[in-house]
Length: 142
Image (tube, rainbow, N blue to C red):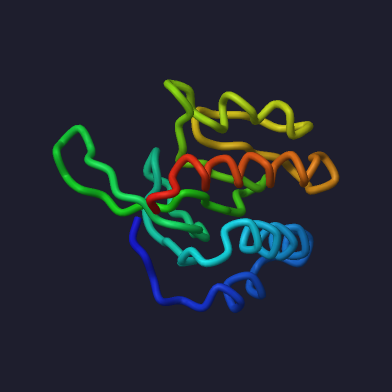
């Protein structure tokens, strides 16, 4: 995946109407929690080889197992085929933050570094934003 210069407002406007409002609400809330940090649209092949468009909030660098240095986002927001995913690139101790706290958010699917749900109606937005804030604090060098 690569950073783009694509306008995020235009990207959000281009989304299907049934998901646009949830994505705009999430973008505004995450942007407020991550205020002062860069916000960029990433596009390209994501894990598993699928084409994705992800709004990235904050940045951090890490070295992959192949020794390559990678610039990535702290929080990512993406619309999938039938759900919304929030990617959280933070670890607390030895646990992935999304995996550790994600189930507290509501009716969600939790992965190592993702929390996915079909609608804002199924989650507690304040709890999700608390996890976003925790990730920001844990990656405060970003």
